Image (cartoon, rainbow, N blue to C red):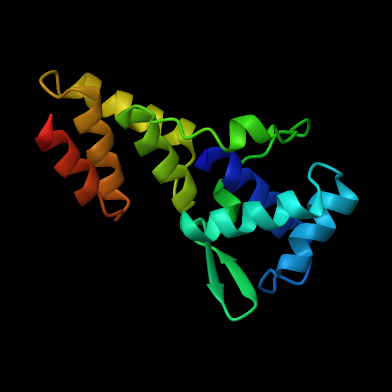
Length: 154
């Protein structure tokens, strides 16, 4: 599943709840099937199950919570759901995944992280951009161990 698209879908449904309560499957069906008319009810159920499996949503009883900070997700006004793109599992480059990680945390936007990493990279001539971005993630108290292990394996 394309986690970027899935996070945007969860953010849309989450923002539809004015009371800030946990989400339910019915919220997803109401927003995605009836209000937006983007997916059929069966597609919504399939999406929610896959989102739970991929740890985008956390299930507690019949309540669903996003596993990320929804305020960090920017959804374009003209966003529409392409089911083929949603279920295409694309392995993104490490830099792209680090940007998604920081924006999903809600601590920095992608643009803020890119600007700070570029400034650090310009000051420290011997760092590559990936290391500079890791330093920014660490400054924001984000767990970067999985990215470090991946860099060590290269």
